[in-house]
Length: 580
Image (cartoon, rainbow, N blue to C red; front, side, top):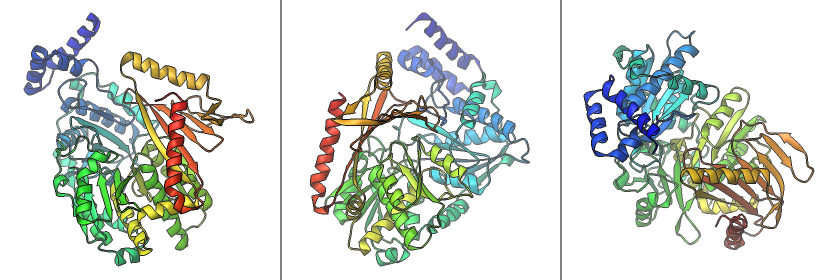
């Protein structure tokens, strides 16, 4: 560590020791300075970045931690921007929600104090609520913005702060960069007004819950199947998160009367005591739910993350064993079912569409194409799906969409991924399948048989430190400047470079612009239909590779054989690219 960096760290710490900070904070800073040099450095070596999606960090004192003052500064910056943008509004309004994480309610109330001190009307939930309900509340209450206090599925030490715009979607360009600038303009804690105006703060809760759930109930497409299978055995776990507030109720009001809420994980608890990570993408997070499912011979297992915007799912395979469905399989089931039922009910009028992200399975595209439904690809991140929803509002009809990272949405009255809606819909699909003496696993094989058998895999290559960052940069430069001509003996026929915003047809040599914002993402499309997507992580020292392969499945009895062949194909691609 250089002397200059040491001086910068000390300068930041002295501001906290000498400035207008509370005594308890000053005491903790002093203790770190005297007793824990490493933690002291981690707390003050930089400012916690407010990025395009808000901020996320470990909780504690210091400029690089989530605390009253970093949250307050971010909220003041947001308030300043809102007052510049909505000068014609009689009253600017912001909705606030929070999840089960430690300090989430505290940070939510700090945000409410700062906004109200700036003359902004605040609607704050009276207790923890799912992220998608916040998105709904923003739209229903005609707010100009919203704040969700959550760190999603990060470890317990973390918390976060997500900002939404008046459409109910997370901030996108230009508002994201403009809010960042306003936050960066807060140079002193003295620029933050913490003196809240209680007359500007209104608590909301059950009234919004009721309206939100009534909207979700309107989405049901197979009420008779639910009635026929009302005692479908469902095990649900909120993994100590906010889902417990609405998912069980929503399932019951949908008509499911045999839902077992996993007791060991039903209590909202920011320490997440029964899991290493509260992430429904990881099998370990569902271990207890699977034990209960086997015990009661359940039909379906559902698990939501701490802020209940993503859902994991387990179903029985042909051997009566529970398997986890990944995000690509789940979104394929969802889109297949929605389009099938919309067609049966003559709801297709010619202006319908679905949305997926560029790293999500192409099976979703194939299903849409076969049914003459428009589809749109967007970057990873649900805010880009919300951006398309806003673009086509009043023009086209959104059926549904999602992303491979376990986030899905049906209809557009919410503008973020919604695990409450998703749990209800997946339970309905299971009931519909059972009416046909099938499981969700059977339906998935039907989809592969009807369209094509797609398999996907995500591989993250970790490269830590400065040298690791340089290695990741070199990998991307090499892929970009000297791209593969073939991969695993299949010719590369198309390259999409989202940083250079161009698409290159390797067969014809033709190049055309990509209608996407700039992003450091590369995609290689092979002659055999395989797709490889590569992008560095924006938040972690890793580079991510998304592999997608497919094969026809003319005979459903060959499912296991073809599945193994596709797994081998992905392994061969990984080996060819030197990633093992």
